[in-house]
Image (cartoon, rainbow, N blue to C red; front, side, top):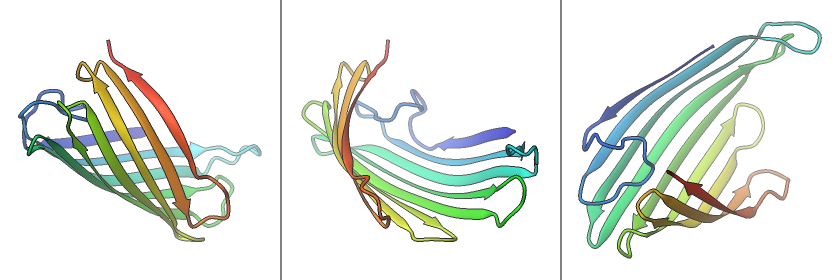
Length: 167
């Protein structure tokens, strides 16, 4: 198994792994990632399965008016080969999202859109609408959002509330 990521940061280079930035710095990054896991076994002991994925993403986070504008996009391809044979499953996934951080850089409403496109079956469209509330920078982040999904026959719409604490 191997996993790798290459990041190119074209703006500020401090705190590159934060999901939101504060202050006046400008952030812009491009990323390339990939993973491969081979010799996956099934219950009968066949070990010819594998999972492979590759992706490209980009992000910009810049001051805009009284706040900060955040936008990102991502495209991925995923290939799954089942142990024991059968047709591989190839899936493409793309995502775009944007948010605006304001009120003294504490509140960030956002919208994200994902599309999952399998080579067999129907594409799924997933939209998230929500907001992040930050206290003391990244020390405390509260996130609330709703998930709306189309393209399947299941009731998977819902909401979530989560907290992230850094210390």
